[in-house]
Length: 284
Length: 294
View: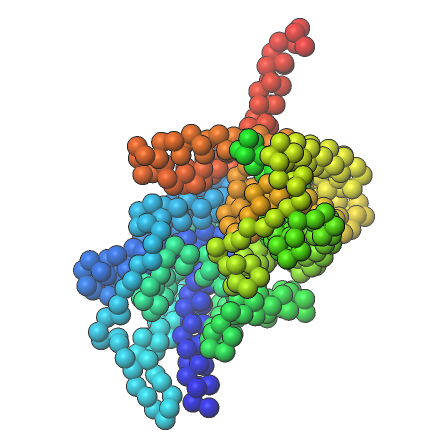
């Protein structure tokens, strides 16, 4: 029984990380209708830039900050330089973001090399507690905390602030928002940078949590994010959270019992959803 | 000669990709699944049965059957919702297949791959050369015939304006499904040819990079032309070989995909017609200015 709870906790922590990657994909699609195939690369840049800063300065917090800033800058550059040219052209958007994935991934390989990078958890965050056979690891608890914190922050931003109102209105009808004198393009850029920053931070957290990572970290996690978005429903924040926890817990249990089939079960979950409820769990 | 064989086979693979991207207007990120399927099926059958013709032909037949089945499954799952789902679902299935090939070590040899034997006739490089040239030309003719058929015309209508094609009474889902089936079959046969030409398979074949190769070739050559696949395949090979030659002088040339990616983005943004399309446009403009010559 205690192993089940431990695995659930692990799954919850995984799920929170996947949520942080997927939320950018989901909100950007909801607002701009763009499926960002380069999101995994932004995530990966967060991991590399964050871990490099952390290893150089010894400060975990500086690493987190660096991961968010670097990914946000890349996201902003992507949106300004490429996506801006092809608004409204879905085919070109998919093609351009895939090109960005290729370029950003190859750039990482050119700078850091294709080899695995190892990194240790800061001493404060090592270890954990055991209560009645259930293991509470500090790092996992921190991950869950950051995930819930960012979820709450996003909910607040979207539902309680003026910017959030503009974003929600932009999702409904961007032309109308523009006609009311709001610079919707600027809002697009901000949302894109924000989604990228959150992805970058999750990249840093995941990389340090794993202790070792290589250039394939981007694509595999992007795939999980896509599965989550399909399961939860595109554009829905709550749907993304539920979908992420579902996928996270499934992955955690599969990794314990049948690790080779973890990805197969997730893709199967997505296929099942597409068959019975193609619009996702929380979308209308 | 090996380079020419690779160019022929990849050209056929790129043309099958163009059928989706250029003629139907949908993007697949899992096209290498079919390529890997064909290559691995032939390889596995030949390894376990020895070098004779009957199992080889049976493997080719099985490849076609499985490719059609898989294409059908992916189409059913992904085409009903949004166009972008097709790209996401093909990416997921493609990666799942690639992971499966790597993990199922007892059959596939994992990331090391494995060698296998072929009938005597298929080992001679001259035979393989003409066979792959024939395969490329046959793919070109069949695909050209297909896009000029009534079904192909409907596909063009879908690419241009799907709601209007629907309004005209066409079941666009059905037509897209046919396009995926044809494209997947040609791609899987290209995989068979690749396995024949190299007598070796590895996890690099069903990887996302292979799909990106087809994407780059199609875009660089020109989408919606079929010939673009051939031009793109040749161009990429030549540029790749030239850049590899520079790799000793500067490390950046080792990351030639980075350079290709940048060229690719520029083409998508500024020359969406690719080499063939842009050339055709330039010739058209020139003819307009000099009507007396033509």
